[in-house]
Length: 248
Image 1: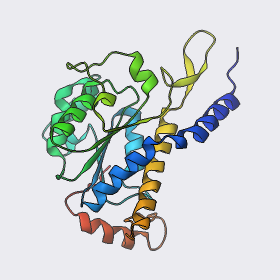
Image 2: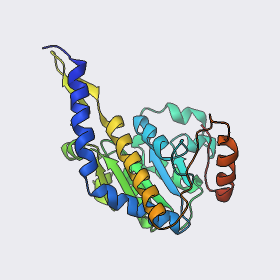
Image 3: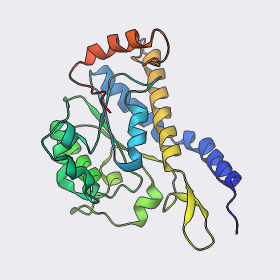
């Protein structure tokens, strides 16, 4: 057995062709559109590698301006937790951290939440999803149904992210995430970041289409690396002052 990178490319190519056919993408875009036209902000959270997908949603060129990224380090940056908390190996498994993150966030009534987790079972993501729904917000999950269904929840309730979301976007990652088997067990070639980012971009672009069709001007970022980018972006960000954070 040998590892062939071209097999990985072909696997990704198949997913890129099939994932856009998921009708849940349009449902998610409808929730985005509802939130934005109602004055809401998109609140995105992912821990570990899933934070890369939250970054696809919040604060990038071509993306929507009324977006905010939540992160585990918020408990230090915006709260009073010591920096050593971020060294805890089990931080994303601790449900209590979710309430700290949410209470520190600039959240308002019409905000929509997107929580990204490949497994969808760790304590922070499940507790955050629980709190979000208890507080009356719409919730979109980006997760792997295959992996999530194969493992037990690490939350005391026994629930998983997919159990709580209004819309579930399946990133089609396999159990364990990687797709190229190794001779002595295990696999290489993880797909979840690629496919979850694709789902995020599909939802954003469909939302922009929805806004255009409704006669709205979509609040979309320009690249900060084009001459007019900073002026354009700062003008739009000012409309959401105190509600969106653009720190590291």
